[in-house]
Amino acid sequence: MIEFRSVTKKFPDGTVAVDDFSLTMPSHETTVLVGSSGCGKTTILRMINRMVEPTSGQILIDDVDVSGQDKVGLRRSIGYVLQAAGLLPHRRVVDNVATVPMLNGTPKKDAREAALGLLDKVGLDRSLGARYPRQLSGGQQQRVGVARALASDPNILLMDEPFGAVDPIVRADLQAELTRLQKELGKTIVFVTHDIDEAFALADQVVIFRKGGRIAQQGTPAEILANPADEFVETFIGADRGRRRLRVRDSTEDGGPAGGPQVLVDGDGRVAGVLDERGPTR
Amino acid sequence: MSWALDNLDLVWELTLHHIRLSIVPIVLAFVLAIPLGWIANRNKTSRAIVVTTGSLLYTIPSLPLFVILPVIIGTRVLDETNLVVALLIYGVALMMRSATDALGSVDATVLQAADAMGYSAWARFWRVELPLAGPVLLAGIRVVSVSTIALVSVGIIIGSRNLGYLFQDGKQRDILAEVGTGIVASLLIALVFDLIIVLLGRLTLPWTRSDAKRSGSRGSSSQGSDDEALREDPVVATYGEQQR
Image (spheres, rainbow over the protein chains, first blue to last red):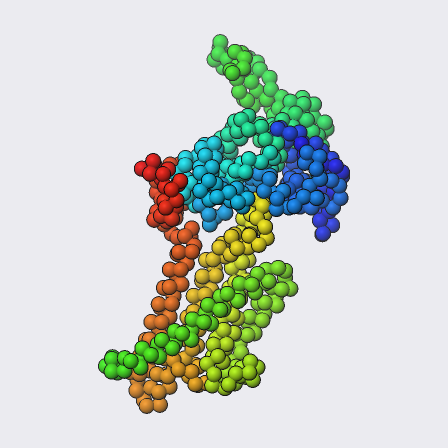
């Protein structure tokens, strides 16, 4: 469990990135921090592993204040996935994945063997282990980034807009992969994104931010969709444009195929999908 | 050509001296410039100081430097050390600028990733910053190498024995072939040094090689010769074989 207690971060230039922020991120769940750029979500993420130090307030991991912990040790105990993967360009994929275990003194051979196993886990061919990061596609690099963050088997995984730099198809792929991994591993994940659809796809708990690191609304995706707290949230999740309000299209609207599945449209009348009356497929 | 062949022993002896006098300042300039480059990248002030000092040092004319150096470092006027120190000053002046650029050129995202991973500041410098600064450092030391080899010949006026002797002697005795031999020999040294530096770069910076080209598709085996090191690793080698 990660707990923020009245955390404020003021940067030397006077900007208040985060103002009196309190939040609990439950263990073994995915908390997604979502908001437009400059809302302080990344600052909050980075305070967990002390990449950024709070001006005031406390951050606790399992009831232990992080400010009393050795920075280097703390960071090695927490997985971190960056935007554009942040792989070390001068080290082969296998060594990138083995970074943290090797920093912790695991023998090279063991660390590499474990790293190859992790490539399997994130759906990459082991032969890619011998390549350098730039010889991989963006999506593959991102998977390596996830494998690297998992290498020391941390309880906590921090993900800073990890899928921001890949195209939508690869992005959906990576999101599905993360969901699958999380089912298997049950890590405490803190995920930062500006994409509300990504937040809804991955989160157990969604936290929507206004500027200054202030929470606009927090809750499960269903809670937020069903009851947006205010206009800001409605706009942010697209409810104001009718994008989230689906209804079955009236058969008189146009000449759709009779007897086929019923077509769903959103509040603006755009086709959004079909109604599956068989119920959940799994 | 015949002059060079007739005086092969002399040319060879001078060439060896020339090489010996060049190596020390080149290597030392490289080593000394790195901490200076590191300091330059701490903040704007330190950067301004390092870069300006570098430029100023490089503008010192060589002749007065040779005259002043013995007074400053307490050596005899005709001591070879004077030449080595003077060359080192020029080498460091050039190289500290390169080292500043090299360390500054390292991608900030990668450094952040290294921090997030839990590299200590010391480990980050040696295992991430320095290797990634490698290509720019290499470009810098190639310039220093050529410039040093050219400058060594000036040392002839303070009694150093090197290929500069052929220029001085050839001019005084009006033997054009002797001057030409000196030029060709200097050029050859510069070329060989450059080759050695480039080779060292290929060995120490394998990820920069052009055969390590980007290829996106999964599982295609387009690995180049740069995989040799890893094939020696039994774990990785086994999987490499299975791929074939």
